Image (cartoon, rainbow, N blue to C red; front, side):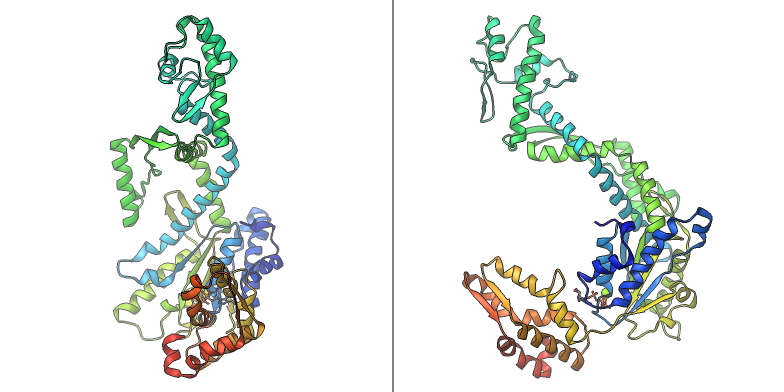
Length: 502
Ligand SMILES: Nc1ncnc2c1ncn2[C@@H]1O[C@H](COP(=O)(O)OP(=O)(O)OP(=O)(O)O)[C@@H](O)[C@H]1O
Ligand SMILES: [Mg+2]
Protein backbone atom coordinates (compact mmCIF):
# COMPACT_ATOMS: atom_id res chain seq x y z
CA UNK A 1 0.00 0.00 0.00
CA UNK A 2 1.22 3.39 -0.97
CA UNK A 3 1.30 6.43 1.23
CA UNK A 4 -1.28 8.69 -0.28
CA UNK A 5 0.05 11.88 1.23
CA UNK A 6 3.32 11.53 -0.59
CA UNK A 7 1.81 11.16 -4.05
CA UNK A 8 1.37 14.13 -6.35
CA UNK A 9 -1.55 14.10 -8.79
CA UNK A 10 0.87 13.24 -11.56
CA UNK A 11 2.16 10.27 -9.60
CA UNK A 12 -1.33 9.07 -8.80
CA UNK A 13 -2.19 9.17 -12.49
CA UNK A 14 1.03 7.31 -13.27
CA UNK A 15 0.05 4.57 -10.82
CA UNK A 16 -3.38 4.28 -12.39
CA UNK A 17 -1.78 4.13 -15.82
CA UNK A 18 -0.21 0.83 -14.88
CA UNK A 19 -3.64 -0.81 -14.99
CA UNK A 20 -5.99 1.46 -16.87
CA UNK A 21 -5.58 2.55 -20.45
CA UNK A 22 -6.73 6.02 -21.40
CA UNK A 23 -9.50 7.75 -19.45
CA UNK A 24 -7.15 10.57 -18.60
CA UNK A 25 -9.83 13.01 -17.59
CA UNK A 26 -11.21 10.65 -14.99
CA UNK A 27 -7.78 9.80 -13.69
CA UNK A 28 -6.87 13.45 -13.37
CA UNK A 29 -10.11 14.23 -11.54
CA UNK A 30 -9.64 11.56 -8.91
CA UNK A 31 -5.98 12.46 -8.54
CA UNK A 32 -6.81 16.12 -7.94
CA UNK A 33 -9.57 15.25 -5.51
CA UNK A 34 -7.19 13.11 -3.51
CA UNK A 35 -4.45 15.68 -3.50
CA UNK A 36 -6.82 18.45 -2.47
CA UNK A 37 -7.61 16.62 0.67
CA UNK A 38 -4.00 16.34 1.69
CA UNK A 39 -3.63 20.01 0.83
CA UNK A 40 -6.60 20.82 3.00
CA UNK A 41 -5.07 19.04 5.95
CA UNK A 42 -2.07 21.35 5.83
CA UNK A 43 -4.22 24.44 6.35
CA UNK A 44 -5.08 26.03 9.68
CA UNK A 45 -8.09 24.46 11.31
CA UNK A 46 -10.58 27.29 10.72
CA UNK A 47 -9.88 27.37 7.00
CA UNK A 48 -9.81 23.61 6.84
CA UNK A 49 -13.35 23.21 8.05
CA UNK A 50 -14.66 25.45 5.31
CA UNK A 51 -13.30 23.37 2.48
CA UNK A 52 -15.68 20.60 1.52
CA UNK A 53 -14.50 17.84 -0.75
CA UNK A 54 -15.46 18.12 -4.39
CA UNK A 55 -17.36 14.93 -4.95
CA UNK A 56 -17.02 13.33 -8.34
CA UNK A 57 -19.59 11.85 -10.67
CA UNK A 58 -18.07 9.50 -13.24
CA UNK A 59 -20.22 9.03 -16.28
CA UNK A 60 -19.50 6.58 -19.02
CA UNK A 61 -20.73 3.54 -20.90
CA UNK A 62 -20.39 0.10 -19.48
CA UNK A 63 -17.02 -1.62 -19.36
CA UNK A 64 -14.74 1.36 -19.85
CA UNK A 65 -13.01 1.40 -16.50
CA UNK A 66 -15.17 3.29 -14.01
CA UNK A 67 -15.13 0.59 -11.38
CA UNK A 68 -11.61 -0.36 -12.31
CA UNK A 69 -10.32 3.16 -11.59
CA UNK A 70 -11.95 3.07 -8.19
CA UNK A 71 -10.59 -0.37 -7.45
CA UNK A 72 -7.05 0.59 -8.33
CA UNK A 73 -7.36 3.84 -6.44
CA UNK A 74 -8.31 1.90 -3.37
CA UNK A 75 -5.28 -0.30 -3.68
CA UNK A 76 -2.78 2.43 -4.21
CA UNK A 77 -3.86 4.96 -1.63
CA UNK A 78 -3.53 4.56 2.07
CA UNK A 79 -6.98 6.00 2.61
CA UNK A 80 -9.88 4.01 3.98
CA UNK A 81 -11.96 3.17 0.97
CA UNK A 82 -15.08 1.19 0.23
CA UNK A 83 -17.19 0.61 -2.81
CA UNK A 84 -20.94 0.14 -2.55
CA UNK A 85 -23.58 -0.46 -5.13
CA UNK A 86 -26.39 2.05 -4.91
CA UNK A 87 -28.86 -0.59 -6.04
CA UNK A 88 -28.16 -2.57 -2.91
CA UNK A 89 -30.21 -0.11 -0.92
CA UNK A 90 -33.28 -0.56 -3.07
CA UNK A 91 -33.43 -4.23 -2.24
CA UNK A 92 -36.33 -5.48 -0.25
CA UNK A 93 -35.60 -5.20 3.41
CA UNK A 94 -33.36 -2.18 3.14
CA UNK A 95 -35.06 0.88 4.48
CA UNK A 96 -34.23 4.28 5.74
CA UNK A 97 -31.11 4.57 7.75
CA UNK A 98 -29.54 1.48 6.32
CA UNK A 99 -27.60 3.59 3.85
CA UNK A 100 -25.61 4.61 6.89
CA UNK A 101 -24.15 1.15 6.81
CA UNK A 102 -21.76 2.42 4.13
CA UNK A 103 -20.19 4.69 6.71
CA UNK A 104 -20.11 1.89 9.24
CA UNK A 105 -18.42 -0.36 6.71
CA UNK A 106 -15.90 2.35 5.90
CA UNK A 107 -15.15 2.78 9.57
CA UNK A 108 -14.71 -0.96 10.04
CA UNK A 109 -12.39 -0.95 7.08
CA UNK A 110 -10.41 1.95 8.54
CA UNK A 111 -10.25 0.22 11.89
CA UNK A 112 -8.76 -2.91 10.39
CA UNK A 113 -6.37 -0.90 8.33
CA UNK A 114 -5.02 1.06 11.29
CA UNK A 115 -4.92 -2.07 13.40
CA UNK A 116 -2.89 -3.92 10.80
CA UNK A 117 -0.50 -1.00 10.54
CA UNK A 118 -0.04 -0.74 14.29
CA UNK A 119 0.43 -4.46 14.61
CA UNK A 120 2.96 -4.47 11.83
CA UNK A 121 5.05 -2.11 13.91
CA UNK A 122 5.03 -4.27 17.02
CA UNK A 123 5.22 -7.58 15.23
CA UNK A 124 8.89 -8.09 15.97
CA UNK A 125 8.36 -7.60 19.68
CA UNK A 126 5.31 -9.85 19.65
CA UNK A 127 7.22 -12.60 17.84
CA UNK A 128 9.84 -12.55 20.58
CA UNK A 129 7.16 -12.97 23.19
CA UNK A 130 5.56 -15.76 21.23
CA UNK A 131 8.85 -17.63 21.08
CA UNK A 132 9.08 -17.49 24.86
CA UNK A 133 5.49 -18.61 25.16
CA UNK A 134 6.13 -21.54 22.85
CA UNK A 135 9.14 -22.55 24.90
CA UNK A 136 6.99 -22.35 28.01
CA UNK A 137 4.58 -24.74 26.35
CA UNK A 138 7.33 -27.12 25.34
CA UNK A 139 9.22 -26.92 28.61
CA UNK A 140 6.87 -25.83 31.33
CA UNK A 141 8.73 -24.16 34.13
CA UNK A 142 11.87 -23.41 32.19
CA UNK A 143 11.11 -19.74 31.68
CA UNK A 144 12.78 -16.85 33.41
CA UNK A 145 9.53 -15.84 34.97
CA UNK A 146 8.54 -18.44 37.50
CA UNK A 147 5.38 -20.23 36.45
CA UNK A 148 2.40 -20.37 38.74
CA UNK A 149 3.01 -23.95 39.68
CA UNK A 150 6.30 -25.02 41.28
CA UNK A 151 8.74 -26.07 38.60
CA UNK A 152 9.52 -29.58 39.78
CA UNK A 153 6.38 -31.44 38.81
CA UNK A 154 6.84 -30.00 35.39
CA UNK A 155 10.44 -31.05 35.21
CA UNK A 156 9.30 -34.54 36.00
CA UNK A 157 6.98 -34.50 33.08
CA UNK A 158 10.00 -34.34 30.82
CA UNK A 159 11.24 -37.81 30.02
CA UNK A 160 14.88 -37.60 31.00
CA UNK A 161 16.73 -40.77 30.23
CA UNK A 162 19.59 -42.22 32.21
CA UNK A 163 22.35 -40.48 30.31
CA UNK A 164 20.76 -37.13 30.96
CA UNK A 165 19.59 -36.60 27.40
CA UNK A 166 16.06 -35.48 26.84
CA UNK A 167 13.69 -37.07 24.39
CA UNK A 168 10.59 -35.32 23.28
CA UNK A 169 8.54 -36.94 20.63
CA UNK A 170 11.02 -38.19 18.09
CA UNK A 171 13.57 -35.56 18.89
CA UNK A 172 16.50 -36.70 20.91
CA UNK A 173 18.45 -34.01 22.62
CA UNK A 174 21.96 -34.89 23.75
CA UNK A 175 22.75 -33.55 27.15
CA UNK A 176 25.60 -31.11 27.37
CA UNK A 177 28.41 -31.51 29.90
CA UNK A 178 26.75 -29.16 32.35
CA UNK A 179 23.80 -31.45 32.56
CA UNK A 180 26.01 -34.43 33.14
CA UNK A 181 27.79 -32.71 35.97
CA UNK A 182 24.57 -32.09 37.70
CA UNK A 183 23.48 -35.60 37.16
CA UNK A 184 26.72 -37.06 38.52
CA UNK A 185 26.43 -35.00 41.63
CA UNK A 186 23.05 -36.51 42.15
CA UNK A 187 23.16 -40.02 43.56
CA UNK A 188 19.82 -41.01 42.15
CA UNK A 189 20.84 -39.86 38.70
CA UNK A 190 19.56 -42.92 36.89
CA UNK A 191 16.08 -42.49 38.10
CA UNK A 192 13.95 -41.30 35.31
CA UNK A 193 12.15 -38.09 35.71
CA UNK A 194 13.59 -37.11 39.09
CA UNK A 195 16.85 -35.46 38.25
CA UNK A 196 17.68 -33.64 41.44
CA UNK A 197 16.79 -33.06 45.01
CA UNK A 198 15.45 -29.79 46.26
CA UNK A 199 18.83 -28.60 47.53
CA UNK A 200 20.06 -28.30 43.98
CA UNK A 201 17.34 -26.05 42.69
CA UNK A 202 19.71 -23.41 41.32
CA UNK A 203 21.52 -25.90 39.18
CA UNK A 204 18.20 -27.24 38.02
CA UNK A 205 17.50 -23.78 36.84
CA UNK A 206 20.66 -23.47 34.83
CA UNK A 207 19.96 -26.96 33.64
CA UNK A 208 16.56 -26.00 32.43
CA UNK A 209 17.99 -22.85 30.94
CA UNK A 210 20.39 -24.68 28.75
CA UNK A 211 17.69 -27.12 27.71
CA UNK A 212 15.50 -24.16 26.94
CA UNK A 213 18.21 -22.65 24.78
CA UNK A 214 18.58 -25.90 22.89
CA UNK A 215 14.87 -25.97 22.28
CA UNK A 216 15.01 -22.39 21.20
CA UNK A 217 17.62 -23.28 18.63
CA UNK A 218 15.56 -26.21 17.40
CA UNK A 219 12.47 -24.05 17.28
CA UNK A 220 14.25 -21.47 15.16
CA UNK A 221 15.53 -24.15 12.85
CA UNK A 222 11.95 -25.26 12.38
CA UNK A 223 12.55 -28.73 13.76
CA UNK A 224 9.69 -28.63 16.24
CA UNK A 225 6.96 -27.44 13.90
CA UNK A 226 4.94 -30.64 14.05
CA UNK A 227 5.15 -31.11 17.82
CA UNK A 228 1.79 -31.09 19.54
CA UNK A 229 1.22 -28.70 22.40
CA UNK A 230 -1.79 -27.66 24.35
CA UNK A 231 -2.90 -24.06 24.10
CA UNK A 232 -5.71 -22.03 25.54
CA UNK A 233 -7.83 -20.77 22.72
CA UNK A 234 -9.74 -17.63 23.49
CA UNK A 235 -12.96 -17.30 21.67
CA UNK A 236 -12.55 -13.99 19.96
CA UNK A 237 -14.62 -11.52 21.80
CA UNK A 238 -15.93 -8.72 19.66
CA UNK A 239 -15.76 -5.22 20.99
CA UNK A 240 -18.83 -4.71 23.09
CA UNK A 241 -21.31 -3.37 20.60
CA UNK A 242 -23.99 -1.54 22.44
CA UNK A 243 -25.31 0.33 19.50
CA UNK A 244 -28.63 -1.28 20.06
CA UNK A 245 -29.35 1.64 22.37
CA UNK A 246 -28.20 4.19 19.85
CA UNK A 247 -30.61 2.78 17.33
CA UNK A 248 -29.21 0.44 14.77
CA UNK A 249 -30.28 -2.20 12.33
CA UNK A 250 -30.52 -5.95 12.36
CA UNK A 251 -26.80 -6.51 12.05
CA UNK A 252 -26.11 -4.34 15.05
CA UNK A 253 -28.84 -6.01 16.94
CA UNK A 254 -27.31 -9.38 16.30
CA UNK A 255 -23.84 -8.36 17.36
CA UNK A 256 -25.25 -6.69 20.45
CA UNK A 257 -27.05 -9.86 21.34
CA UNK A 258 -23.85 -11.79 20.89
CA UNK A 259 -22.04 -9.35 23.14
CA UNK A 260 -24.68 -9.73 25.81
CA UNK A 261 -24.57 -13.50 25.59
CA UNK A 262 -20.84 -13.23 25.94
CA UNK A 263 -21.21 -11.15 29.06
CA UNK A 264 -23.16 -13.93 30.70
CA UNK A 265 -21.07 -16.82 29.55
CA UNK A 266 -17.91 -14.86 30.23
CA UNK A 267 -16.34 -15.30 26.80
CA UNK A 268 -15.31 -18.88 26.32
CA UNK A 269 -11.80 -20.16 26.32
CA UNK A 270 -10.93 -23.76 25.88
CA UNK A 271 -7.90 -25.98 25.60
CA UNK A 272 -6.87 -27.32 22.27
CA UNK A 273 -4.11 -29.56 21.03
CA UNK A 274 -2.33 -28.03 18.09
CA UNK A 275 1.02 -28.22 16.37
CA UNK A 276 3.70 -25.70 17.20
CA UNK A 277 3.12 -24.22 13.78
CA UNK A 278 -0.52 -23.56 14.58
CA UNK A 279 0.21 -22.53 18.14
CA UNK A 280 2.57 -19.88 16.88
CA UNK A 281 -0.16 -18.30 14.80
CA UNK A 282 -2.73 -18.46 17.55
CA UNK A 283 -0.34 -16.98 20.08
CA UNK A 284 0.86 -14.29 17.72
CA UNK A 285 -2.67 -13.13 17.01
CA UNK A 286 -3.38 -13.16 20.72
CA UNK A 287 -0.27 -11.23 21.67
CA UNK A 288 -0.81 -8.69 18.92
CA UNK A 289 -4.36 -8.16 20.09
CA UNK A 290 -3.25 -7.76 23.66
CA UNK A 291 -0.58 -5.28 22.66
CA UNK A 292 -2.86 -2.99 20.63
CA UNK A 293 -5.27 -0.75 22.40
CA UNK A 294 -8.60 -0.87 20.53
CA UNK A 295 -9.49 2.63 21.68
CA UNK A 296 -6.32 4.03 20.21
CA UNK A 297 -6.91 2.18 16.98
CA UNK A 298 -10.48 3.44 16.82
CA UNK A 299 -9.39 7.04 17.46
CA UNK A 300 -6.80 6.98 14.72
CA UNK A 301 -9.15 5.16 12.36
CA UNK A 302 -11.92 7.66 12.95
CA UNK A 303 -9.58 10.54 12.26
CA UNK A 304 -8.49 8.92 9.05
CA UNK A 305 -11.98 8.03 7.90
CA UNK A 306 -13.24 11.55 8.57
CA UNK A 307 -10.34 13.33 6.94
CA UNK A 308 -9.34 11.16 4.00
CA UNK A 309 -11.96 8.40 3.70
CA UNK A 310 -13.44 7.66 0.30
CA UNK A 311 -16.78 6.08 -0.51
CA UNK A 312 -17.35 4.92 -4.05
CA UNK A 313 -21.02 4.62 -4.96
CA UNK A 314 -21.32 2.50 -8.06
CA UNK A 315 -24.38 2.13 -10.29
CA UNK A 316 -25.80 5.42 -9.14
CA UNK A 317 -27.65 5.77 -12.45
CA UNK A 318 -29.79 2.84 -11.41
CA UNK A 319 -31.37 4.87 -8.63
CA UNK A 320 -31.95 7.92 -10.81
CA UNK A 321 -35.50 8.20 -12.09
CA UNK A 322 -37.06 10.12 -14.87
CA UNK A 323 -40.16 12.23 -14.36
CA UNK A 324 -43.14 10.10 -13.48
CA UNK A 325 -43.18 9.17 -9.88
CA UNK A 326 -45.18 6.54 -8.15
CA UNK A 327 -45.08 2.78 -8.43
CA UNK A 328 -43.35 0.80 -5.67
CA UNK A 329 -39.83 0.56 -7.12
CA UNK A 330 -39.42 4.20 -8.07
CA UNK A 331 -40.45 5.48 -4.72
CA UNK A 332 -37.81 3.37 -3.11
CA UNK A 333 -35.18 4.60 -5.57
CA UNK A 334 -35.91 8.19 -4.83
CA UNK A 335 -36.05 7.20 -1.21
CA UNK A 336 -32.52 5.87 -1.45
CA UNK A 337 -31.35 9.15 -2.95
CA UNK A 338 -32.97 11.02 -0.09
CA UNK A 339 -31.32 8.72 2.38
CA UNK A 340 -27.92 9.13 0.79
CA UNK A 341 -28.21 12.89 0.71
CA UNK A 342 -27.51 13.69 4.38
CA UNK A 343 -24.54 11.37 4.39
CA UNK A 344 -23.03 13.06 1.37
CA UNK A 345 -23.87 16.48 2.76
CA UNK A 346 -22.23 15.74 6.04
CA UNK A 347 -23.88 14.23 9.04
CA UNK A 348 -22.90 12.06 11.93
CA UNK A 349 -23.29 8.33 11.95
CA UNK A 350 -23.08 6.03 14.94
CA UNK A 351 -20.70 3.18 14.47
CA UNK A 352 -19.44 0.66 16.91
CA UNK A 353 -16.14 2.51 16.94
CA UNK A 354 -17.72 5.82 17.80
CA UNK A 355 -19.50 8.64 16.03
CA UNK A 356 -18.23 9.43 12.55
CA UNK A 357 -18.70 12.81 10.90
CA UNK A 358 -19.07 12.44 7.14
CA UNK A 359 -18.53 16.09 6.18
CA UNK A 360 -15.11 15.58 4.66
CA UNK A 361 -15.44 12.08 3.32
CA UNK A 362 -14.94 12.07 -0.43
CA UNK A 363 -17.72 10.51 -2.47
CA UNK A 364 -17.18 9.25 -5.96
CA UNK A 365 -20.31 8.15 -7.73
CA UNK A 366 -20.34 6.32 -11.01
CA UNK A 367 -22.89 5.19 -13.51
CA UNK A 368 -23.38 4.46 -17.16
CA UNK A 369 -26.40 6.80 -17.37
CA UNK A 370 -27.48 5.15 -20.56
CA UNK A 371 -31.17 5.20 -19.70
CA UNK A 372 -31.28 7.94 -17.10
CA UNK A 373 -29.31 11.19 -17.01
CA UNK A 374 -27.49 12.83 -14.13
CA UNK A 375 -30.27 15.41 -14.22
CA UNK A 376 -32.71 12.65 -13.27
CA UNK A 377 -31.13 12.53 -9.85
CA UNK A 378 -32.89 14.65 -7.28
CA UNK A 379 -31.49 18.19 -7.54
CA UNK A 380 -30.01 18.22 -4.06
CA UNK A 381 -27.97 15.15 -4.84
CA UNK A 382 -26.86 16.48 -8.22
CA UNK A 383 -25.52 19.54 -6.48
CA UNK A 384 -23.52 17.35 -4.19
CA UNK A 385 -21.49 15.95 -7.07
CA UNK A 386 -20.13 19.09 -8.69
CA UNK A 387 -17.30 17.42 -10.59
CA UNK A 388 -18.50 15.55 -13.64
CA UNK A 389 -16.09 13.47 -15.60
CA UNK A 390 -16.99 11.55 -18.67
CA UNK A 391 -15.22 8.38 -19.56
CA UNK A 392 -14.75 7.78 -23.22
CA UNK A 393 -15.93 4.67 -24.95
CA UNK A 394 -13.12 2.44 -26.07
CA UNK A 395 -11.99 1.73 -29.62
CA UNK A 396 -9.82 -0.80 -31.39
CA UNK A 397 -6.61 1.04 -30.58
CA UNK A 398 -7.53 1.13 -26.86
CA UNK A 399 -8.33 -2.56 -26.96
CA UNK A 400 -4.95 -3.32 -28.44
CA UNK A 401 -3.27 -1.54 -25.56
CA UNK A 402 -5.59 -3.08 -22.99
CA UNK A 403 -4.66 -6.51 -24.27
CA UNK A 404 -0.96 -5.83 -23.88
CA UNK A 405 -0.07 -3.05 -21.51
CA UNK A 406 -1.75 -3.29 -18.10
CA UNK A 407 0.25 -5.15 -15.51
CA UNK A 408 -2.57 -7.68 -15.32
CA UNK A 409 -3.21 -7.68 -19.08
CA UNK A 410 -5.38 -10.49 -20.41
CA UNK A 411 -2.64 -11.83 -22.64
CA UNK A 412 -0.22 -12.21 -19.78
CA UNK A 413 -2.93 -13.74 -17.60
CA UNK A 414 -3.51 -16.49 -20.15
CA UNK A 415 0.20 -16.91 -20.78
CA UNK A 416 0.69 -17.43 -17.06
CA UNK A 417 -2.20 -19.87 -16.84
CA UNK A 418 -0.83 -21.94 -19.70
CA UNK A 419 2.67 -21.90 -18.30
CA UNK A 420 1.41 -23.95 -15.37
CA UNK A 421 0.73 -26.68 -17.91
CA UNK A 422 4.20 -26.19 -19.33
CA UNK A 423 2.72 -24.75 -22.50
CA UNK A 424 4.21 -21.53 -23.84
CA UNK A 425 1.87 -19.31 -25.78
CA UNK A 426 2.94 -16.33 -27.73
CA UNK A 427 0.71 -13.73 -29.35
CA UNK A 428 1.96 -12.09 -32.53
CA UNK A 429 1.31 -8.38 -33.06
CA UNK A 430 -1.01 -9.16 -35.92
CA UNK A 431 -3.05 -11.47 -33.75
CA UNK A 432 -3.47 -8.76 -31.16
CA UNK A 433 -4.51 -6.30 -33.86
CA UNK A 434 -7.02 -8.75 -35.22
CA UNK A 435 -8.55 -9.39 -31.80
CA UNK A 436 -8.89 -5.68 -31.10
CA UNK A 437 -10.60 -4.93 -34.39
CA UNK A 438 -12.93 -7.88 -33.91
CA UNK A 439 -13.80 -6.66 -30.42
CA UNK A 440 -14.53 -3.17 -31.73
CA UNK A 441 -16.57 -4.61 -34.56
CA UNK A 442 -18.74 -6.77 -32.36
CA UNK A 443 -19.19 -3.88 -29.93
CA UNK A 444 -20.40 -1.58 -32.67
CA UNK A 445 -22.61 -4.16 -34.33
CA UNK A 446 -24.18 -5.50 -31.16
CA UNK A 447 -24.18 -4.09 -27.69
CA UNK A 448 -21.20 -1.99 -26.66
CA UNK A 449 -19.88 -3.65 -23.54
CA UNK A 450 -16.49 -1.99 -23.70
CA UNK A 451 -13.41 -3.86 -22.62
CA UNK A 452 -15.51 -6.69 -21.24
CA UNK A 453 -15.77 -7.83 -24.86
CA UNK A 454 -12.11 -8.73 -24.75
CA UNK A 455 -12.80 -11.29 -22.06
CA UNK A 456 -15.34 -13.16 -24.19
CA UNK A 457 -13.16 -12.93 -27.28
CA UNK A 458 -10.14 -14.22 -25.47
CA UNK A 459 -12.09 -17.03 -23.89
CA UNK A 460 -13.53 -18.15 -27.22
CA UNK A 461 -10.16 -17.88 -28.90
CA UNK A 462 -8.35 -20.01 -26.40
CA UNK A 463 -11.12 -22.45 -25.57
CA UNK A 464 -9.52 -25.26 -27.53
CA UNK A 465 -6.13 -24.62 -26.12
CA UNK A 466 -7.36 -24.41 -22.55
CA UNK A 467 -9.06 -27.75 -22.96
CA UNK A 468 -6.12 -29.53 -24.50
CA UNK A 469 -3.28 -27.81 -22.70
CA UNK A 470 -2.45 -30.74 -20.46
CA UNK A 471 -1.66 -32.85 -23.52
CA UNK A 472 0.47 -30.15 -25.11
CA UNK A 473 3.03 -30.01 -22.36
CA UNK A 474 6.40 -28.81 -23.55
CA UNK A 475 5.11 -27.13 -26.70
CA UNK A 476 5.15 -23.53 -27.78
CA UNK A 477 1.98 -22.31 -29.42
CA UNK A 478 2.08 -19.26 -31.62
CA UNK A 479 -1.19 -17.33 -31.71
CA UNK A 480 -1.17 -15.75 -35.15
CA UNK A 481 -3.69 -13.67 -37.06
CA UNK A 482 -4.63 -16.80 -38.97
CA UNK A 483 -5.25 -18.61 -35.70
CA UNK A 484 -7.55 -15.78 -34.59
CA UNK A 485 -9.39 -15.79 -37.90
CA UNK A 486 -9.83 -19.51 -37.82
CA UNK A 487 -11.40 -19.51 -34.39
CA UNK A 488 -13.31 -16.27 -34.50
CA UNK A 489 -14.18 -15.13 -37.97
CA UNK A 490 -17.22 -17.33 -38.43
CA UNK A 491 -18.54 -16.45 -35.04
CA UNK A 492 -18.10 -12.75 -35.63
CA UNK A 493 -19.68 -12.84 -39.06
CA UNK A 494 -22.65 -14.86 -37.99
CA UNK A 495 -24.86 -12.41 -36.13
CA UNK A 496 -26.79 -15.09 -34.34
CA UNK A 497 -23.75 -16.99 -33.26
CA UNK A 498 -21.94 -13.95 -31.95
CA UNK A 499 -24.97 -12.86 -30.05
CA UNK A 500 -24.65 -15.99 -27.96
CA UNK A 501 -20.95 -16.57 -27.88
CA UNK A 502 -19.18 -13.23 -27.79
N1 LIG B 1 -9.56 1.68 -19.76
C1 LIG B 1 -9.33 0.41 -19.40
N2 LIG B 1 -8.08 -0.07 -19.29
C2 LIG B 1 -7.87 -1.34 -18.92
N3 LIG B 1 -8.82 -2.23 -18.64
C3 LIG B 1 -10.09 -1.81 -18.72
C4 LIG B 1 -10.41 -0.47 -19.10
N4 LIG B 1 -11.74 -0.34 -19.08
C5 LIG B 1 -12.23 -1.52 -18.72
N5 LIG B 1 -11.26 -2.42 -18.49
C6 LIG B 1 -11.47 -3.80 -18.09
O1 LIG B 1 -12.80 -4.16 -18.39
C7 LIG B 1 -13.48 -4.72 -17.29
C8 LIG B 1 -14.71 -3.95 -16.92
O2 LIG B 1 -14.36 -2.65 -16.50
P1 LIG B 1 -15.11 -1.89 -15.32
O3 LIG B 1 -15.55 -2.85 -14.30
O4 LIG B 1 -14.28 -0.78 -14.86
O5 LIG B 1 -16.38 -1.34 -16.08
P2 LIG B 1 -17.35 -0.16 -15.66
O6 LIG B 1 -16.92 1.06 -16.39
O7 LIG B 1 -17.42 -0.05 -14.19
O8 LIG B 1 -18.72 -0.67 -16.29
P3 LIG B 1 -20.20 -0.74 -15.65
O9 LIG B 1 -20.84 0.55 -15.97
O10 LIG B 1 -20.82 -1.87 -16.39
O11 LIG B 1 -20.06 -1.00 -14.21
C9 LIG B 1 -12.47 -4.79 -16.18
O12 LIG B 1 -12.04 -6.13 -16.08
C10 LIG B 1 -11.31 -3.92 -16.62
O13 LIG B 1 -10.09 -4.53 -16.29
MG1 LIG C 1 -18.85 -0.76 -12.79
